[in-house]
Image (tube, rainbow, N blue to C red):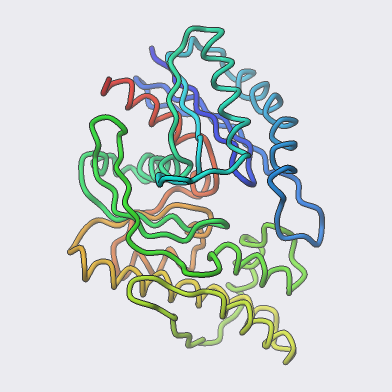
Length: 312
């Protein structure tokens, strides 16, 4: 029985996971990094500090559930699969993987945080056939709003190519900033969705697209104007979500027009929003990560490590 350990120390979540290749059982533990009330982000130095404090507790909770013999370790070493992609927070997970791997003589493998998201979405949506097929993936979160072409790779599991992205504000940033305007805690996504679902008004929005890319900074400004006009909070929340949804759907149409009819997979915390999910499923038949696999987690990284071990 082979167990693989995954470690992910992203900008807002400390996480670790164990994956059993025979039973496909996966166990994960994660904890958000603390953000002071009234703030909408963390400095990298603070993120590193909190990961160092939280990772031992994450390991303690995970291995209290089961203590298997580990075959290999996967860790997130960078945000994306492009040259120069780097964030200091991922060094914490890399150091932990190196320490465990060296002490136990276990192979370690590095992956991008983005690849982990894609794999977690494949696994939790049940669409494992995508590991052998070309497809389109959206990674939409606090730090990323990207549409990707994903293809199988015999060495790295995936080859990921950027097709389109936001040219300014990221979707998660827009949501958090609008949430801040409405007095919601960070991260604001879940509470903003609850508010938006209480709005029964028909809201017409128009995405700002430049080719296949989108621009989202206008959402923050338009919602700020609605706040000044004393519009209901539910309406403002719905306006924000509908604006993000319109941008994602506009990008999807443009990318499919270029790439042809390919499967669409959606990952990242923003894509767990039920309003966006319902629209993408209805119009494009998109696949989505299960909610618990949408936000940052190490599950995909553990699975990627197991797949890379098979390919070697």
